[in-house]
Image (cartoon, rainbow, N blue to C red; front, side):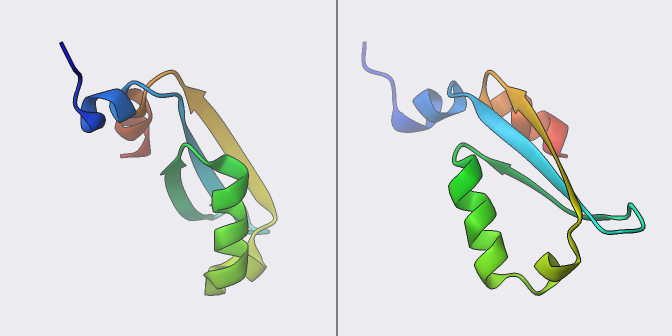
Length: 71
């Protein structure tokens, strides 16, 4: 039986990341399977990026689990 693409993607390892400013205020929460690439995209395009001083990353075995934590 073939799995559809969305089911397969939900089973892939995924990370939740959080960016904080110098006062330790949460600036952004995101979810990705492309950690380093996504980090570079934020750096290039987000006005809040200049305020980031700390990042936390949590890794999950499935996208569904990561999505639940992102909420």
